Length: 120
Figure 1 (cartoon, helix red, strand yellow):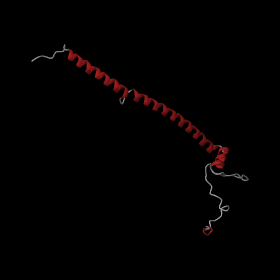
Figure 2 (cartoon, rainbow, N blue to C red):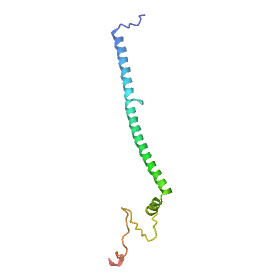
Figure 3 (tube, one colour):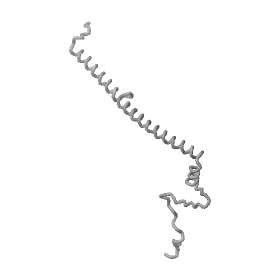
Figure 4 (cartoon, rainbow, N blue to C red):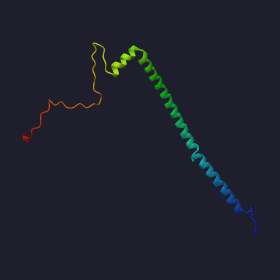
């Protein structure tokens, strides 16, 4: 029985090919894998977007806190809210409520003539 010959050219080529394939597989995994560069880049973009959303929500929260404070303590703010959102009026004031943009109004019934089936 002949022993394994590490000096053989075919064995060296096979080992080299195996090492190259292993390195290629590791590089592909490092770039495209679940913890690869593309995933990392995507997660960083998500984190930046979430930070922007957090800042926006903090600003909205501060604005709402200011509104709450005004509604609890400032008579001018309370009156403004009552007039704008509840359509309340002070004595002597008249409130006009306009239809919302894009609202469809029914056609005027008095200008149309009723259909007479005998007219055909």
